[in-house]
Length: 243
Image (cartoon, rainbow, N blue to C red):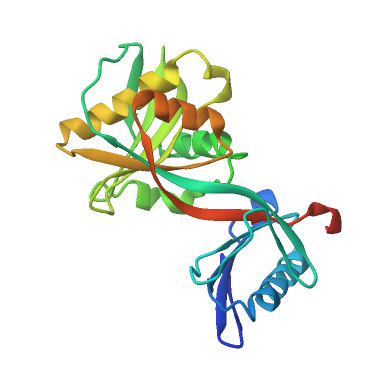
């Protein structure tokens, strides 16, 4: 079971459990709620998550009518300090010069396991990062909605990118390189190659989402020309001294 739906006096939410086994993480999403029953719903979801074995619990609200403190959420039982925001950034798709040293290989049924391995290593510690299992392969190979690449330098795999065409504007839904290749300009060159792919497909712009905590990634995106267009969600993390 990847998620648990919760209800309390008309308030609803979801507990995302897909990262519980690999990382001990649980994500609580409050979807419909009033100020009056917010604390009780959070306490219910948090207690369930702790009993399920979570070692880290993260919380966000989709309900826009509730005004939250920017610094913390304090309920009857729990304390959730503010952690980070998920921000959307956008850029006009345009051709750019790239280095011939990085080669893109589109994924197929043969190299898809390598893509999963790289993805999980790159995003293991990234805020709100998911874990991909073999059940993701059919989705990633659906060329109508996705275009996924492995980046190589001198026959060594160094990073991955996943582009989603599920919306009107393409989204770079995942992009990253392995830690040993950070800081030498390969990320910028890799990103330019992805943008060139989209320019060749005649898409005028592209967007991505990034955590405000992921300073290095944000700096890279801004250097290339991405600009912040909106804040998608605010996330709070349960104080771990009670776990």
